[in-house]
Every structure is written in structure tokens, then in C-alpha cells.
Image (cartoon, rainbow over all chains, first blue to last red; front, side, top):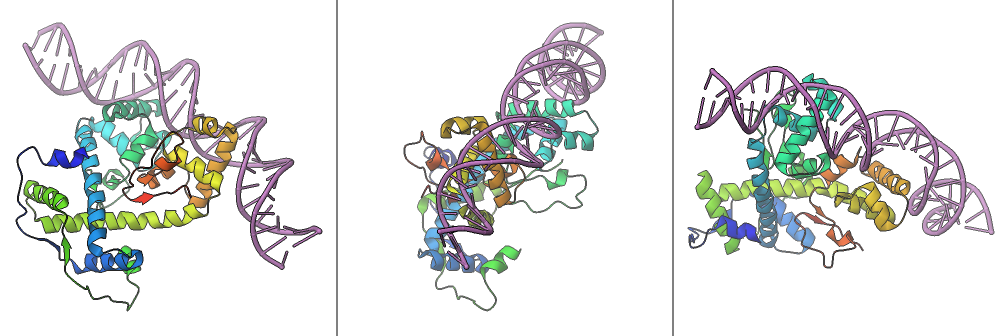
Length: 150
Length: 150
DNA sequence: ATAAAATCAGAACAAAAGTTCTGTTTATCG
DNA sequence: CGATAAACAGAACTTTTGTTCTGATTTTAT
């Protein structure tokens, strides 16, 4: 995978300074249970999960860069759409016309290089846009990527 | 989070048998780099990533249960839809009518308790349905949940 | 063996999303 | 100060999805 290579440019090898120990007892316990259920070692499971999380994190990075290039209005529209609202509902919330929302969405999709809302919602599936929801009081913790309202 | 509680029912405390060490040098190196970039310890980052992956894994479980209750045809339709195909394209691939695909999709959505395609694609965003793609030769590795064709 | 339930299939119509335009207004840069 | 680009707004039209039906054909359980 190019992912690994990308994070380690050519000769900049870094010698692991120490053994990587997962000290959190909560995580340790959950992993032990999974290990028992699956008949694999906790180490093996942890490695798989870390690989998954790292690749998810990497995948999110490119979209994060593109997100920065959206205009304020486009970000707002994208956030609400990713929260599950329809064009009509977004239009009502932002007090602009239905067609305008679609224009912003289209421009945002172009900047993301995505083809439709479904793709976008899929790509940004675990970004936390709750801070963009006018009704929400306090933003919740984000699992992968939190998108600030700046 | 109820996630942690759910995985450890009441008194079934399991004493961690040994220290949980991440031995994979590849992962170790990437984590070290991230640690340097972010100014946090690799241990801390690994713990965060593991928490993320575990909660994603847990979230996938309920949908996995519901997936089992879909009929073969429904699974096939869902898989192709999640691969990004439209109703029309799925109909062409499965050689059934466009309307029939929509019926199967509707029934599947009901069983998933989801409201529309976008929600479904979002919910199953990192399931690997490549094995369902007739054109694919060999299934690829799945990051979170692999859905076999059985 | 047969009643009930699930699956598979589709029609008709309504709603939402997608596409391609055309304009204004606001920043930005030389 | 213009010129140019970006942002914002929307109309008209096409395609895709969503909803609500109806009705065959299996399975499944009693």
C-alpha cells in the first residue's frame, strides 16, 4: 500500500524508540475479550484495528485538504447535507432557495472530486458535523475527523 | 460510552493476561511519525486509534446482524447499491426490472431500519462488497467488515 | 398437505437529486 | 483603479430515488 510509503519518505527511517505498549486497561480488556471470541491473540487484533484506523485516518486527510478550499457557504451546505438533510431542508435552514443549495453542493462536489451526495456522505461518513447543526448546543467528540466551524 | 460496558457484561472481569505490545514494526514506525508530527506519545495515539476502530467495529455489528436477515436477492441488491451503482445499473446487472430492484432495496432498507440509499451507503460505508461485484476477480481485504457472498 | 409468511416481481405516481445554464455581488491582484 | 476570479443565487429541465400499491411464486411451520 502506498499509504505506508507516503508516511515514511525515502531514507528517513526512524528507529522505534521504545516498545509500543497499550497501557489503557479499558482497551486492553476489550481486546482480550475479542481475542477470546475470535481465537486470535489480542496483539494480532490490535494490529488489525490499528491498520484499519490508520488507513481511515489517511483517507480522511485528502478530503480534509479539499474541505479547506470550500467557501464558507459551501462548507455549511456540505455539513448539513452530511448530517442527513435534503436540499430542501438545507434551503429552509439557510434561508436560500432550493436551487441555490444545489449549486453550492455541486461546486463542493467538484472540489471534492466526488460525483453525488451519496458518494460524499459515504466519503465523509465519520466526520463530525454536529457543530454545524444550528439546533445542537455543544459539539460532540469526533471519532475520526472533527470539522470545526471556525 | 455504553460501548465499553456492552462488551464487558457485569462481573466478568478478565484480568489482562500479559502486557499488550504492538510488535508490528510497520505500524510502530507510522505511529512514531504521527507522534512526532502531533507532539503526542505514540502510546496515546495508538490508544485513540484503537478506540476509534473498536467503536466502528461495534457500530458495524448491529448492521451485520440485520444483514443476515436479508434475503439473498436483497443482499445482492444492497451490495451493488453500496458499490455505487444506481437502481438502473443494478437492474441491468441482475437482469431484473428497475422497479424490482427498488422493491428489494425498499425491503432491505426496512430491515436495516434506514430511510434511504444515502443513509445506507453511509452506514455501510466501509463494508467491503467487492466480492459481490460480478466483474471483480478476487475479493480484496476488508478494513472493517467483510461481507461474504456465502 | 395446507395455511401463513417470506420472497420475488412489477406498475404508477411523487419527490428529490443531478445538470446545464445565466446572472449578480464580492474579493483579489497587478 | 480596473480586470479577473471566486462566491453567491437561481431557472429550466432530466434523471434518479422514494412511496404505495398489487400480485405471483416459493418456503416454512403446524
